[in-house]
Length: 256
Image 1 (cartoon, rainbow, N blue to C red):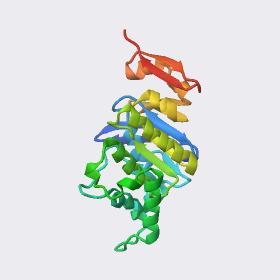
Image 2: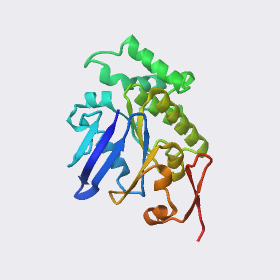
Image 3: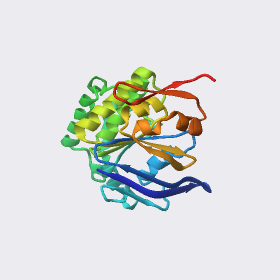
Image 4: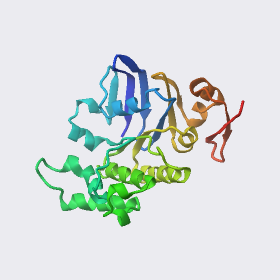
């Protein structure tokens, strides 16, 4: 599914957080939203989800998510927040099954098919062995995979992820991003993430959108966006930018 945002502005608490932002994510692509703290990255993601009103155009597969009811939106877009509320004592399987909520009738119960979908998602994410474990007994990397499992159980074609590698060490960061990439390719998912680590963004995303003070400062392939000059201007950082074997940019801090 294609995501299109045109000239979107969002004001929160009297402050314009997004100002004339445009974004396009083709089917099966991975777009990473990057930018300094306070640039409006999470706000843009939540706007695409239909949760941040404001002037401008937003369409997902031709539909404006802001016009949909919550259950309808949840069948169109799956969202994994940066700091999800994980119910204490709930098992991994039951939390994953919550992803089927948009398809369960009011006052109804999950079907055999819903439970089978949850089991299949846990198997794909190598979580079957943890299905009966309480959420509060998981490691950071396991929790991130379980949050992803709930989103995948919604069986949408669009996956919105807010900082999916937060608080993970480098090994778990790579594991989570590799997993997202494999699922994107296998299921032709349209993935949009916010991500703090610029090198990781450049290594995994097809396209980057650099936000600065609520506006688009640059957009395009990683090698075009992650330049030494752009990082200095918008992150106040000195870096060296080199190319990996596949031509993707790698950033290294440079001492003054």
